Amino acid sequence: MSDIIHLLSDSIANQIAAGEVIQRPASVVKELVENAVDAGADHVQVLLKKSGTLLIQVIDNGKGMSETDARMAFERHATSKISSAQDLFALRSLGFRGEALASIAAVAQVELKTRRKEDETGTLIQISASQIEKQEPVAMNPGSSFSIRNLFFNIPVRRKFLKTPETELKNILTEFERVALVYPQVVFTLWDDTTEILSLPVSNLKQRIINVTGKKIAPTLLPIAIETSFIRISGFIGTPDSGRKRGSLQYFFVNGRYMRHPYFHRAVMMAFEPFLPAGEQPNYFIYFDIDPSSIDVNIHPTKTEIKFENEQMLFQVITSAVKEAIAVPALEFDREGAIDIPVYDPHRTTPVEAPNVQLRSDYNPFKETQRHSYERPKLNWEKLYEKQDASSDGIPVHNTFFSNDKQENRPDSQDSFLQHKGRYLITSLKSGLTIIDQRRAHIRILFDDYIRRMTQKQGVSQKLLFPEMIAFTPKQAAILPCILDDLAFIGFDLANLGGNTYSINGIPAGLENVDTIETLRDMVEKVLETGCEITEEITESLALALAQKAAISYGKALSEEEAQSLIAKLFSSDSPNYTPDGKMIVSILSEEEVGKRFK
Image 1 (cartoon, rainbow, N blue to C red):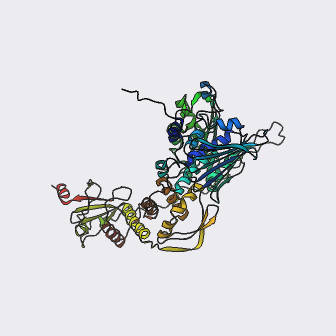
Image 2 (image 1 turned 30 degrees about the vertical axis):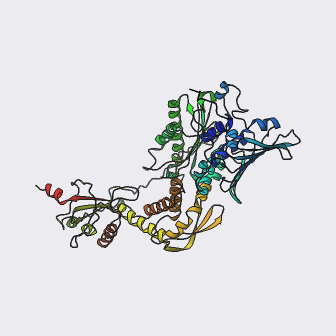
Image 3 (image 1 turned 180 degrees about the vertical axis):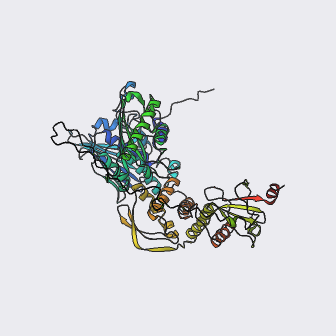
């Protein structure tokens, strides 16, 4: 039997490596921008065509490469960052494996122009699918310019799995921002076709965060700083009232490198826990400066996971630092009426006066006029006993479902409704006693209505007398083109004013009492989480986000007519038992079960 094991060719090996390192255009942008920063550039420009699927060009003014280095850079495992295994534990650079350029060249058409300051001419190299097609001198400014064309042109299967341009641009922005947030001393610009997406001038760290994420975050940023014998932690966290249910801005950086770390995230959440409402997430931008020998950055192909030597101790340090940052603003009391404590001055010649405290001598807490008035709540017991068959607290709810028989699902005409604690509607059906979550029922009704509007392209818009302005982040603005039509069909009238800013000229009818700007942001964030690949998913994400914002809140008292209308509309739905996100709306207690309670 002949031997069957053989060595792969360099071309195939590079394509396999590219499968780990280069997953989409965003991966190329990440590797090239990191290389530009490692090269000492203070100006990095990224130019895209069709969100990077046709062209990715990264231009920097770094130190450039010699003719020999430019050629060697495309060899697998060729690197200037390390020369021995010990160097892996003293890394300060972003790239080090020497796989990026070889992997990119294996699956794209690459052109490199590079020149060192001390050289009179630069070097031009053209490579396609790992094969060098041209190498010659070229006139250019010092630095490097990489042009990556037709990514995955030689691997049609990989190219077929690329997402929509909006989704690819969103992913590019994610990687671009992760580098830009660490290096405020570097100018970064990003263009997609002829549109400038981001322009980040040199600034301090706080201003860079604001430039990347939007001006709205500025007043919510709290500085965080702590230094121990083994780590220095700095950065900013958001105030507790700036927490979000979705789309939170959460970043960890270690020695200038972005990382994901669920364990450290839990440390931040533990510090925020007493201050955040349930389900909300805080914003944070936390930077670690630590001895490279105490971490391992070589445990993941994309280098976004890092192993720390003493994670439990770091957990406690992070929690303490965040708690301290949150507590500081709480000590800034209102100065009106406060007592000024004089600063000690050994050279003071005038005596220090005792503080003057103003008291109300006429105040008597036992006087009726000075106590808070209190009215006993009206419990409406009479309404509770109007119908003996209406049950209340002590009955367990059994999870049965509506059948498809619409006649069986309709309430008896002579029966009324009982609203329990502003949350549940209790009524009688032919199949038994029914308990309905009124907010979830309203979400289902609104969701069905918004889906119908978008499907039939018949939105009802209420024009605003005074249009509102909304500024999106670059990432949010990148996803807008794929949802603008659906927003219009729902009833939103938006006008693009440029610079990621839109004018809200009209809103869906019935949304007058809802925070329009916050609603739009939540809807866009919902689509960012879902993605922009499947039209049906986009439509459902928008409809659900808007329904959740517009639905009645718990505690709202409903009139008999409102309750009847809500129940009738719910029964006419094709899916009355559950909300679109799978939460139960209706539970029925059968006649037999009710009867057992009275035996």
